[in-house]
Length: 504
Ligand code: TYD
Ligand code: MG
Image (cartoon, rainbow, N blue to C red; front, top):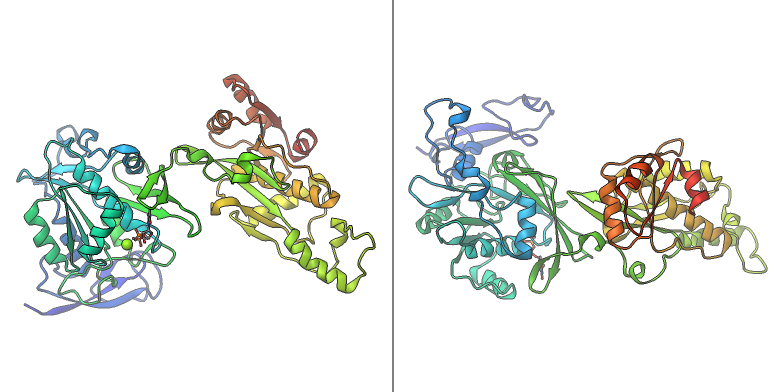
């Protein structure tokens, strides 16, 4: 008893070995194996700390007795069955349930208590709202009585005192009788206290603060499970992500009040869903019209500014409209300074945009929210097809609201925004893109417009929101016409040149 053993753990994949290797024998990364000592007297932790923590976590769940392989048709399915999910009610609950694949999956244990049969890991940047989210979910489960028997839900915090959590609960207007709070960082202590109450669900906030006695390394250390990095990723050994059933990530920009909840792993449902919330004084609230949430206010009530184009992007099963904005004024002004120093100020103060192209001055493109190489490609293609002079100039390209445009379906909107901005700056006449036009399509190297997945869905959303015109790849025109959308004109174009001729 009390003897400790040495183990080597790969910091990348979590592989453990009794001896050191230069190359991880599981993931083949070089130099990732690190030494840890683990004492023998940890229950369940025979050789390595991961087993200890996995067993500790798994021991919360009822064990299935299995004498050997079971025939498929004889396997009992009750536990993961949809009907057994704890339904989360209300608009907030429905939004969480959407991401979880229907609700939280509980199971019956042999002693008749209801346990939550799934381990859900929530990651995200500090301050993004994980504690708020989990407290709200805990309260919902505590209030939900459709699983047959009421039971407590315990919220354990290793970061905050129960008074602090109590205050937070007040702000969130939570006053359920079945919610219990506990503050501790010792896994064994938590399990002991928690089991006495036979809870329906337990929230641990956060996993990096709890530790298992007998395993060396501080809380959140390599052996003591995982931690969340600055960029919000669940780092360290990926063990934790392998053990749990569901991994959720919460995302959001600091300057925006929108919060996105995404599942990256889900044993009970699709990982293709996205929950959209808005932060408020009284906690997270589901966003009811997510399609429009990324549109700026100027867009919603007036004509587009020059260099602003709308794209229809699909994330999860829903369509979001986002704005691509291009500007160069600020940067032109900078290059203007260079021009002024080397040339003379034009008499009429009217500076032609192209006149600002000073040979030899390299001005960077500032690109936000689109992959830089993608934007470069689109700009080069546009240059060729429209005969534009852009290369030596600064382009400031931005996707509004801090969203990242990952889908190539947004290519055409990027091109349209750049084109419009250039036309504006080169003519000093304002030609805004009409307010009710949206652009869908991927751009190929020859400027051709390519089809994108689920285009009907995108156009449907645009039609519902009152868009008057949608520019799409020619190949999609027929299929869309067959669907027959009301009030929206579908303009099919073969390539960028056609888009410019027909629409811009
Ligand atoms: P918190 O839930 O503590 O974030 P995390 O656990 O991810 O670090 O939230 C951070 C702060 O934001 C906290 O002071 C509470 C506040 N907040 C709201 O006021 N309303 C909200 O809807 C959310 C999600 C957070
Ligand atoms: Mg927190």
